[in-house]
View (tube, rainbow, N blue to C red):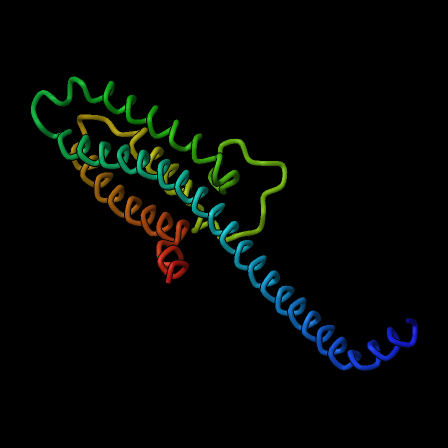
Length: 185
């Protein structure tokens, strides 16, 4: 019986080697597939986190844009008769809303150069790209306006438009809409 088993083993040894090589090849293909799947899944997970952050920032930016546009129309209407009586109250309302937008923006952009309460150690960076600086400049711009000075109001409105445009450019750079499109292509 043992002789039969040894003859059978000798006869099947090339086939066993082929089965072993085939099994090793299948294992290698499975390993490669697993590695590619892992990296693809990791890329998708990272992009999902980015999209969630971007969506949060976009919500904040949408609210902030509403406030900026409200300020723009407030300044546009400031020269109309009857608007001067409510000027201070409306200005203070917009200042409060803008201040709240700046404080909410600290969740996403924790430090900026025009911060009233500077952090212990400010990071080295390009301060012109600090998105909250634009909002602080708008705040400082309308805080000092008086209803009697229509020339200053018009100048402030024009500066507001420039700051709003700069804010929009920084907002677009922050969420990178092209990156989202490129990810799905």
